[in-house]
Amino acid sequence: MIRTNKELFNYITNLVLSGSDHSFSEHHFAPSQEILIEGKKVFSVYIMKSGMVKCYLTTDTGNNFIQEFFGEGELFGEIELMDDSFSYCTIKAIDMVSVYKIQKSDFLQLLDQDKKFNRLFIGALISKLKYKATRHSYNQSHTIEEKLMRLKMKFPDLEKVISKQDIADYLGITLRALNRTIKAMSAI
Amino acid sequence: MIRTNKELFNYITNLVLSGSDHSFSEHHFAPSQEILIEGKKVFSVYIMKSGMVKCYLTTDTGNNFIQEFFGEGELFGEIELMDDSFSYCTIKAIDMVSVYKIQKSDFLQLLDQDKKFNRLFIGALISKLKYKATRHSYNQSHTIEEKLMRLKMKFPDLEKVISKQDIADYLGITLRALNRTIKAMSAI
DNA sequence: CGCGTAATTGAAAAGTATCAACACTGGTGG
DNA sequence: CCACCAGTGTTGATACTTTTCAATTACGCG
Image 1 (cartoon, rainbow over the protein chains, first blue to last red):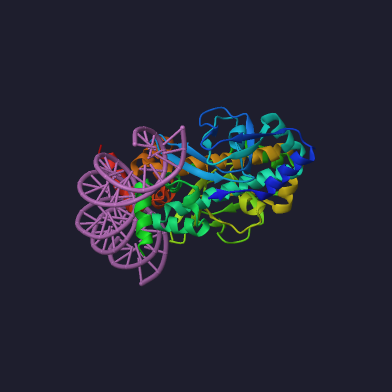
Image 2 (cartoon, rainbow over the protein chains, first blue to last red; image 1 turned 120 degrees about the vertical axis):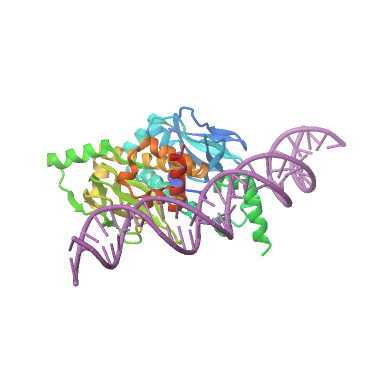
């Protein structure tokens, strides 16, 4: 659920630190600040340097559905940029966040000229695809209790980092259902 | 729900017909034949030439969850190939299917040497990503009736092509629920 | 201390799954 | 030509799960 991409992170960090590439700039965001906003045009790709953001979209029913939480090395904005569309989701900082930012033209140039980067980028897309596919399938065919079990396995101290509402939005359930299930599970 | 990729289709068709690339071979499958099988190693990328396949994965609860239906120009096998893993889903022909097949090494070479192809490939991944993101979000936050309405809008004669069970598997619901909803909707 | 946000809980309503029975269809073999 | 069979589709009754609505408590911070 909290996605990272070490390989990409290391590569970008190297690019920046070695001074061989000047197209990346660093930016900082405070908790609950929005980095991308649903429906707005996107001009850059962002790569997480530190901290955590949530990526969510608001449905026509007014619910927030959280796609993923991004940590170190994950990138966002790439979808909108590549197909030249408006942002389909909102990216909001959860804690203190630092990101690397690269403009569209620079990004496309890097993609064309740097084979290693190109491959890493494709790898990042593939990883997201696979993640989304299995997640949707899992979500459809399991009860809330099973989903929660799985989350607790992977992230034992999740509740300390992420609010209950966010966890509910991530699982696609109501806060009420989340609380009932947690209580039922702890009673065992 | 039935995904296609005209741009990629045209490009590949040209490559094949012009004779400038010999790494593609053509293959045919009969209805209900399996092209990729979940859990097995993948050695090639496939691109749909004609017909339709379903891409589904079997969950630990025994349900089949259909990810997508692929038509002309869509590609599959790319995820497994790029991250060197076993197939996470099964691809099964629905009607008569023709595909172009390209081996891993040839595919990677093409990706490196053909900038246009590289860009088209990335575009295909991006398109899938976006599709999956919005679909999951929609699925979570709407009732069966709403999902069906939407399907009927986009594919009015869906039931003639795809079996009820497949539609149910695609929506992540039981066949019973599908039938009840259809009947309730037609009564209006 | 007071305010706003986050968390908790109960009760009723709505939505879905499960289980089980039956109908329809096209093809196959006696 | 009919009987049978397997696959697909239809329907009812019931139990279970989740949402909705609403009220209350806990917590952090200026």
